[in-house]
Image (cartoon, rainbow, N blue to C red; front, side, top):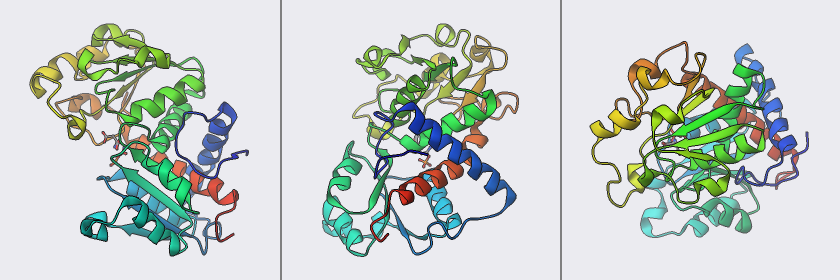
Length: 311
Ligand code: ASP
Ligand code: CP
């Protein structure tokens, strides 16, 4: 496959064959993972460092698993007990890890653009694991892989991304990926949580769940990202759930075989009802997590083919 980039910083700017190639490769890793086999030679002698300035369960763990399955030495740096607390800057921290001959640097940071900045300063390949409200490219790839496996193609799917779109890097990466791969995308949420520039991204905007979910193939729910809100942008969790929380009644507007997605972590009873989240007929939330490992293996694989620093 052709992936002529040294890093993975964003979905925006990737071309359809690059996205399709990553998904094809990830597909082969799904089968490998399920067979219980590994490919430890691929990244043998390589070092992957997880540098997470924000909390994570899925992303950090799956990068660790993916790296180990391909034979890399994986280090999870604990930012909360690191010299960041003694005032060391992001750039100096990255330069320090770089000097230890890190090959793959996986970065999550609350500032949009932090991974791009690091990519200009270090010789490691940099992977964006979520930066502020900007992008979360491996999340969009794993969402796309989940959908493609369920529906056979992304082309022509009608997808509603619902909730706190304003603060969501997951929404931004998905809007770029799904649009590039031929889906029609709607965003649904209260006016306070939909970015003013949403329509310019080529999506349809709805402020009513029933109207926004009408006839959709996929509903992607988002968490209220309270950690990014200077003040509360919703009246109360109970009222938010009443109008924008996904329950069976609202889901009835969608196609009968609608797929329900959520990047996690979920806040049950706020943006999604447990009965919907756990409904095996519609919910693919567990599958999304499984696909995360395969997608991250594919990303590590292609970046290593680009020639890592020690190569
Ligand atoms: N885990 C995703 C992210 O880090 C979504 C979320 O936290 O709500 O962007
Ligand atoms: N979806 C996601 O990025 O989850 P974590 O924040 O747990 O990594």
